[in-house]
Structures are given as structure tokens and as C-alpha cells.
Length: 72
Image 1: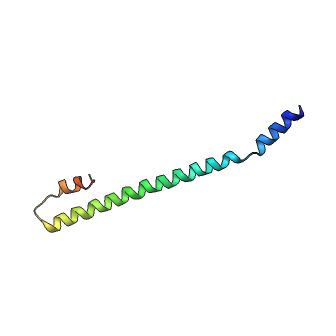
Image 2: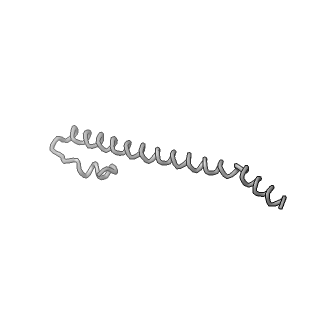
Image 3: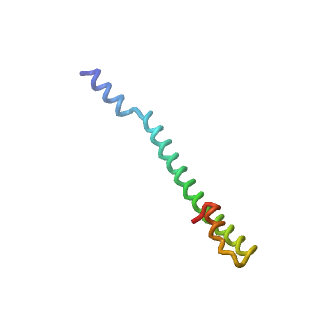
């Protein structure tokens, strides 16, 4: 019974798995932040391309340009 109680005590005190979980959470947060940043950057770039298209040709609708740039 002594070996079993020592095994349980060692298992409770073992924190090696926590490091992997912490890295996984941190990695998920970084990836989530990058997705949001790239989404915002893409929206801003599409708006700038559409504005530039309108400035170059005032009669153009610029919808094809925005779609080709990755926007909606």
C-alpha cells in the first residue's frame, strides 16, 4: 500500500503536463490574434484599393477590383 500512496502523491505533484497545456493556450491566443489582425488588415486594404480605384476612374464601380483584392 505504501507504493500506491507514493505513486498517487507523485502523480498529484507532477506538473510536467501543465507546461504543454500552457503552451497550447498561448499558441491558440496568438493564432486568434493573428486571424483578427489579418481580417482587419484585409478589410482596410480593400477599402484603400476601392478608394484608389474611384480616384483614378470616377465612373468606375470598382466592385471587380475589390473582389480581386480579396474583399467582398
